[in-house]
Length: 530
Image (cartoon, rainbow, N blue to C red; front, side):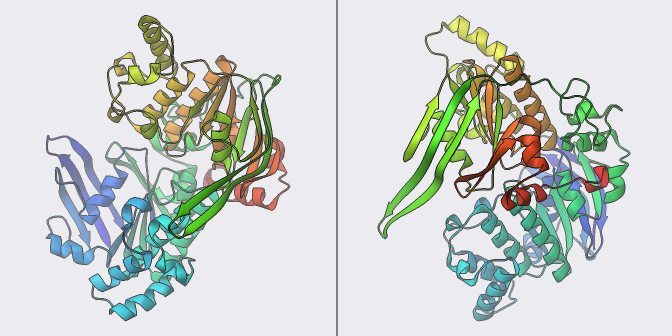
């Protein structure tokens, strides 16, 4: 159905971003495209759609149903987009029009392609919403009135509205918690089969690839380095880079130093899927340094139409001891980040009490928004240091940047000059500059690809151990929490529903919600048989 041959993408300055990319997808086939951030996955999809930036040039051939797309007019491409070829993007808030109801946006796809009258499109919109598990009244809502999972369902409905033959999914579940992620993936597979659409599923999550695809393409630095059936690729990969991706996804495996594998470190022959070689030493926790007692947080909103209340946390109690690594897990809206912000002093409880002994520092999910774009890295990292001479500040900055693997040449540069993983390491350096007693990490690796995730987790573990810090690690990714933390608290709808040592809670969960979270973790089924 689609044949890509020798596809190259070049910048205006002559830098080549894609190198002779070639592959085919048959009608109804489900293909995964995996690789690290910057490998060229999304660029490949944008080239197929004819949506490349104006400063990029594509050469080669992209043939769809016998029609050449490269060099086709914008009018021809517009007829294909949304009708014959559709794309589901990673971030629905940027893909949806905030000024239109979601129902109007779905209907627009059908009317633009002259597939239906306005009344027919309205009726079909209700059917599409039902297909993606949304009630008819959702059609009247605006994007900001919906959750992340609901918005992603709307994007799927829009993508299917034109009855496409090919569906391009660009990291469609990266920002979602595990339970919603699983629902969305199952929905995409079900609807692709129902509508007879072929699928190109772009992701850095190999667990998802093993669930979604029949065949896998592996991309590195703009090259396709491996192509084969999913079960074969994930059990007996031929290329060292593919082995590295598998290793970085396997959070049960560690190297001889007790570190999680990164793509680079696992390219060596030492990696064996599912085998834990070494466990890092973790000292016994000491005295209590954080006590949260019966904390509730109610947010009140006032508008022209009246006021409303949202209960974000309800009678939450927990403790943290010196040297302890505590995970707080739960789905979106469970209240875990609210509790972390209250412990950090960034928010106040409506009722209850919080006692903290020692200094706290926070690492946020999005380092780009937590680093001032107008400040150099040296100024950002040294900002928490008060009453310290300039020479001592600079010396401390050099030390902490070295601890997180950022070179001294970064001192005079700005946040936008770094990758997401580098910015997160800089954020960690900033947090440990004052040598805090307690490090509070709010989803610090959820937006990172598997190799960068492993690198950041290794750095966090090393620093917490080396400096005797305590850690509270908030995440919706239970597999990450299992590797980083000794104890875990499970939250749902603002309440703590289960707690205990990680191995106890994961091995024998008492609550149905905990079992649901654990069952939703994407597995590398062909690798470890779990």
